[in-house]
Amino acid sequence: MAGSVGSEDGDVGFQIAPMVDVVFVLLLFFMASAGSQVIERELNISLPSGRGAQSSGPPPTPVIIDIGADGVVSMNNKTFDTPVSKELPELRARLKENIERFGDKDPVIIRPDENARQDRIIDVLNSAAAAGVKNLTFS
Image (tube, one colour):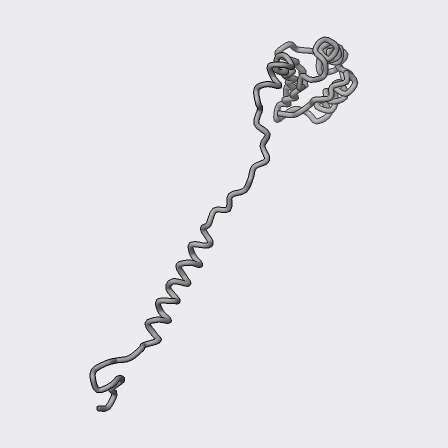
């Protein structure tokens, strides 16, 4: 018989093309699923135990220094010095007094207005450095 692919019993035999198709589909499946695998990483976070805060006293209270767009400086909602004073002696004295009373563990947070001049921010930083502030950050 012309065009017959098997034995006379009707047995077609082993076909390789369907097996290659199945292997190809499985390969695609595993390649696609491997790309979406989530890799878990260890986060190095030290969680508070609760024992250290109780034995060392109250938690530190932040000192917040606001700098307005017009150059007015205020510390914990108390306005200091006019914009013409570059040295900010009142702010410096208040920061020094705060460090003497509570130590340098209290953080000082500087919150400048988005339109505040950079030289005014430098004036506040200079005053904080002259007062001996060690724990300073921006917000």
